[in-house]
Amino acid sequence: MKRFNLIMPAVLVAAAFLLLAFVVPQDQKKGEPWNIPDNYLKMKNPLAADDAAMINVGKTLYAKHCRSCHGNAGLGDGVKAKQLKTFPGDFSSEAFHNLSDGAIYYKSFIGRDEMPNFEKSIPDMEDRWAIVTYIRATCRKK
Image (cartoon, rainbow, N blue to C red; front, top):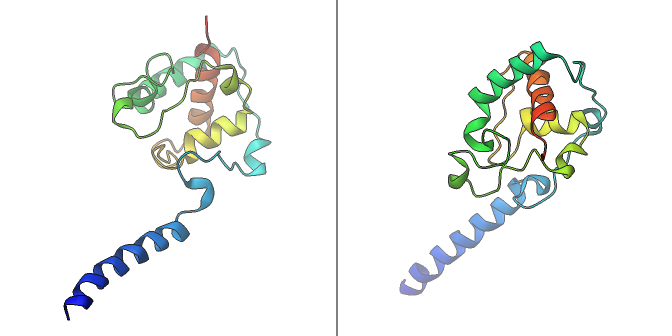
């Protein structure tokens, strides 16, 4: 009976780790590159890049939904960033600005891991694109 009491917890722990390895999709594990579906990669922002009114809408929505993690200038230094296990990203980087509009949209609104899904929080497509427009227009290295 003692042997059973020692072996059973180890078996349960091993089974839990194996289960988690198969339940969490590979592209969703931390440190893995984003697996962005082709239909998102091909999406184009329908808003004009210099639409001041939509940039202002994006700024307001960014302040409400994004700033706490991504910071005022999109540098990944928001007040909640220190609590995250992963770096929220630097929106001023060349790598970020080389992403397609659809890739930014997918990462911003579909999310994964610590990046939450915002489809319900920001249901209006124009509002979502306004945030993308705002980020592209204002989060650049000087």
